[in-house]
Length: 143
Image (cartoon, rainbow, N blue to C red; front, side):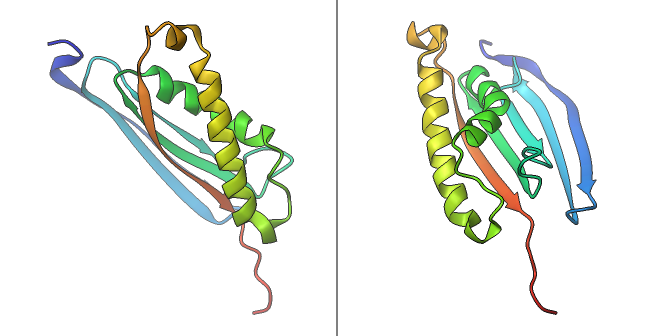
């Protein structure tokens, strides 16, 4: 049956959590299904870094044709995002900063993955779609 199983694996990875200091909760659930390997991955960082405690990062990576790209992005994207040095403690500019940081980080991780030996030699031809969000604490002024 190739890349598919005879019966689906229906056990689910489920997690719920909250950050009371930021006033939000999250939940996630993942299931392998009919694929021979789990091709999807995710990120849930309630604090992106100690230097940027107001930022949280969430992402879902839907692997296509294999698992490598989705797993690689989930593992390495946060460091690429921070390495852009475009995110600061100034929340008044977070939309512009986030757009620039995401664009730079995605281009950098794409270039890094293209240089991986299994990608260069064509052994791994997997890919992934991604949906990510950077959550910033909202500062309220007035009542």
